[in-house]
Length: 154
Image (cartoon, rainbow, N blue to C red; front, top):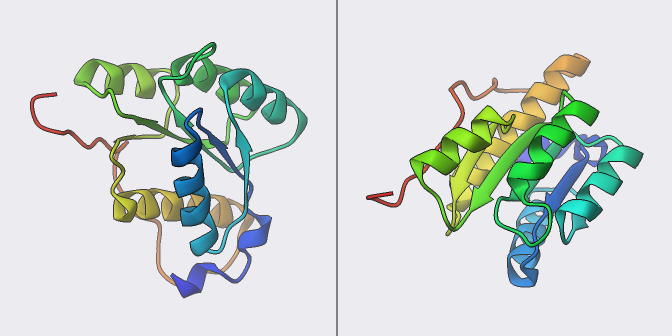
C-alpha cells in the first residue's frame, strides 16, 4: 500500500494487547504498513494513554485481565469520539460481536487474525482520518458496515 505511506507518521495508533506474542505480531504488521504505534499491555494502561494523547486508531483485544476490551471501548469513545476502534478476540461469538459494536467498536475481527482483513480495516481508519483532514489520497474509503469474521459455529 505504497500510496498510504506518504504521511503515515501523522496517524496515531494504539495497540492494546496483553499477550506479548500477539503484541509483537501487531507491531511488526503496523511497521510493515509504514505506521508507528504505541502499546498498552492492559486496559488501565490504555485508558491512561488515551487520556493523555489523541489516537486515530485503537486495536484492542477483548479478553484481558482487569479492564477488558469491552470495558475500555466506551471509555475510549467518550474520551476520543473520533477514534476508530478495532476489537479483536480469540473467543468470538455473535454475542461478543454485538456487545463490541454496541459499546462503540468500529470493527470486529476474530483471532487468528487474517492480515488482509486487518490491513483493509487499518486502511479504512486511515482513509477516514485523512478525508476528515482534507488530505488528498488516491483510492477511496473502503465502504461497508462494521466487520465480523466468524470461525464457523460461533
